[in-house]
Length: 143
Image (cartoon, rainbow, N blue to C red):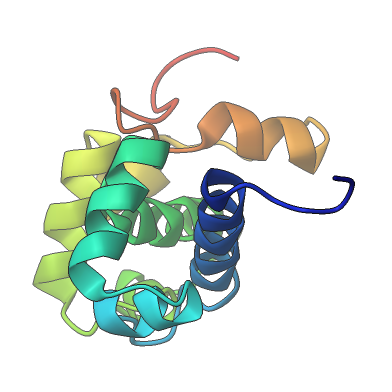
């Protein structure tokens, strides 16, 4: 039949919808039950399925998105680190700094001091500098 999705396709589509919501609303206070509701799943099932499909927990995915945006702000603006933390959705500067260091491999202040504005199309910059769950972002490396 044309136009009928398998249960797996439907579940994947709902997961993508939830991930898109995290991408769009990363700076808002999001928790797993709220995002799971976007996918019409229980929080436990959503967490298990999200990790199986995307290779990381919803919480870690959201952290990486927030840190990705923070990296751009630190590289491109003079906004104080505390304000950057708040603008990307962290309520605590210490939580932001700890998360930033674990993902990027440097503190926000160290990153800003060593970062240079990249002269490449923004789509390449974002792809190259996107934090990875498999290692550190492109901090200190050459494109």
